[in-house]
Amino acid sequence: MRPSSPSCFALRPQTQSTFLLAKLFASRFRPEPADPHAFDTRPPPREPGPVGVLLVNLGTPDEPTPGAIRRYLAEFLSDRRVIEIPQWLWQIVLRGVVLPRRPAALAPRYREIWMPEGSPLLVWSLAQARSLQQVFDTEGLPVRVEAAMRYGSPAVASAIDSLRGQGCERILTVPMYPQYAAGTTATAVDAVAAVAGALRNQPELRFVKRFYADAGYIGALAARVWAHWDAHGKPEKLLLSFHGLPRRVVELGDPYYRDCMATAELLRQALGADGALVELAFQSRFGRAKWLEPYTEPTLKSWAAAGVRRVDVMCPGFLADCLETLEEIQGQCRASFLAAGGQEFRYIPCLNDDPAWIDALAALVRRQLGGWL
Ligand SMILES: C=CC1=C(C)c2cc3[nH]c(cc4nc(cc5[nH]c(cc1n2)c(C)c5CCC(=O)O)C(CCC(=O)O)=C4C)c(C)c3C=C
Ligand SMILES: [Fe+2]
Ligand SMILES: [Fe+2]
Image 1 (tube, rainbow, N blue to C red):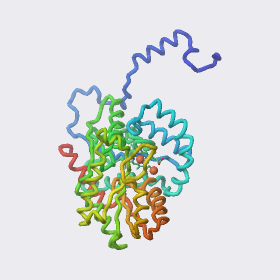
Image 2 (tube, helix red, strand yellow):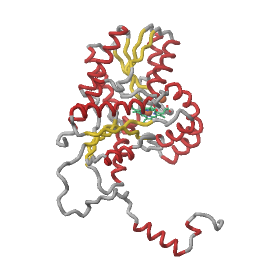
Image 3 (cartoon, protein in one colour):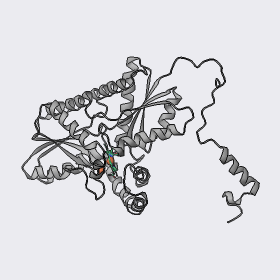
Image 4 (cartoon, rainbow, N blue to C red):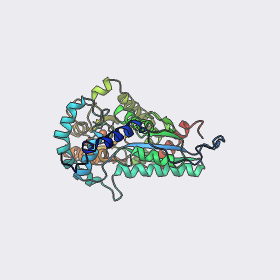
């Protein structure tokens, strides 16, 4: 080792032991901002400060470039909740096959959907947080809303820092997935718990688990379909396409499949439609394992082959438009359906910042804040 090396092996023995002692006594909790009232003997003020609401969605690359996509995928796909196979084996595949190839293939697909302000998933997530904030401000409620991404930015830790900086000692986290999956919902909860785990003065925490049957959510979806049908007429078929999941994780106890079935059935009822008009399928399969079926793209192709000419497709499990809806559904699936003989393919956009959905979200949040406001 060269003498100029910064490694601690090159330090003098005394310096080295000071280092080790400092490490031994260092707190594992992040320091709190200096509190001038820390030793004030009077009881703390009764005013509890505003309530924080944290909307957490999945995450997306910062730019539509292979480098940014690689960083995003490396974080996302290294989460043990997302890929449930032995890590030593998966890391070999991830580093050896997925990360060297997938980012370059994804870059043009991300570029195609990129908005002037950024990735649609982030743009819509921020718009949802802004609109929800407006609802609470109009009502005069002491609530602060932040959006965070589970992978990438804005990170969950910085959103929680921001809420605490605004005086929030109570935080409600809403994972932005109506149907519960360990790979999405639970991992958002893990991220918030990990941030709290490094804090000395922790906020009080609550979590929304899922809302697949929430009347406001179903009503907002149904209203969007009706508005679309009023403008364009009814199709021969409406396909409800949910993000897929490996079959195995459902067999292991993930309630996702039943949640999706229930949402589809409630939406069908709200539309007064029958099973022949409204069907469900699963998209975005990743890897070679069996995922939930029927798969979206083959379903659309088989419909076209069977003579169906006009379809509408909606993705009720995604609350914000993103790569999986704009590129996979509106791009790839549309092309497949038309190539197989279909004539009209209409995509009904996600709820995004639709006022009916923001009102439903505000109602859902208000219900969870019982006793805090
Ligand atoms: C809506 C719920 C989602 C579930 C359930 C879900 C499970 C899941 N996803 C992967 C792998 C990938 N997903 C990718 C993108 C992506 N996934 C969701 C949502 C769910 N995923 C969203 C909102 C997005 C879009 C992100 C964006 O930037 O717009 C990707 C990246 C794209 C790609 O490579 O195709 C992967 C990979 C797994 C393995 C999984 C099951 C646990
Ligand atoms: Fe996904
Ligand atoms: Fe995909």
